[in-house]
Length: 143
Image (tube, rainbow, N blue to C red):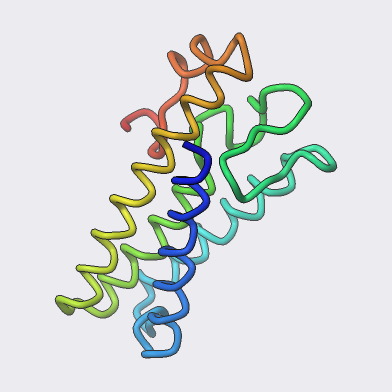
């Protein structure tokens, strides 16, 4: 499972680079800018919530306590939420089939990573099942 997660990390990074280099990542639309700023703030907030040495870009839970503060109070995967906001705001700013296709592919990859990561977290943290009952995966109060 961990190998799947590591392999799946390549797709969002490659897609992000492609969208940036092709001019399809950012937009002059105030709506897109606002969504991407919210995504960036969420990503920074989630990152600084981690304790020293606990952050890992792979689905490989480190030693320490289960994070349930900061954005993790509301959603279990704020970093994935950030990525989804970035990719789908790109679709809003550049509504083409290629950009939408990339966003759909990335959404599928993130769904796989979430599934793998949650299995690992359930094994690593005894309180994860209870935490999962009171939080949403990516959208507060909804999903």
